[in-house]
Amino acid sequence: MMRKRIIIFAGGILCLTLMAIGYHLYNMPRKTAADIQTDKQVSAKELFEAFVKDEQAANIQYGNKILEVTGTVTDVQQSGADLSILLSGENSQGGINCTLVSGVNTPAPNVGELVHIKGRCTGFIMDVSLIDATIVNHKK
Image 1 (cartoon, one colour):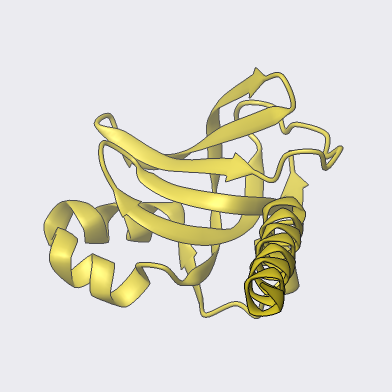
Image 2: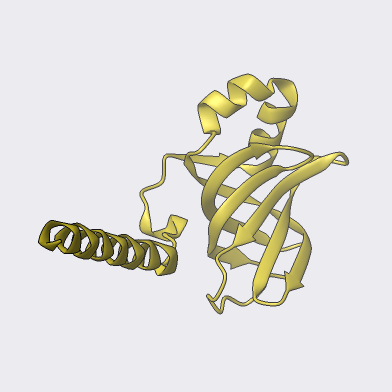
């Protein structure tokens, strides 16, 4: 009888501990690219052309790396707190889609401005994707 109580009590403590760890991990803030050292600096044109030319080689070179990309803004889309900026790949087919970190009040650049954005490259679908991005600077 006493052994059964100890086992139930230990199981309850274990469940509560696992729930607390899960809650903490779920609510932990995401790291932004701004907090991580840059792996490579590249222009939007170079990056886009590398993925169009050979996607597998470009994924090896740029995939899951922190990149600083410089390019001209062709589109800015705001959806709630999310801001997405499209940099020109100087090709009518696509460009670099940069999704900025939510909750950071960064003024959106205007179309035609030259910007310098830092983010994590996640690959290529129709555009090259950079996530957790931040604007390093932008000039008119």
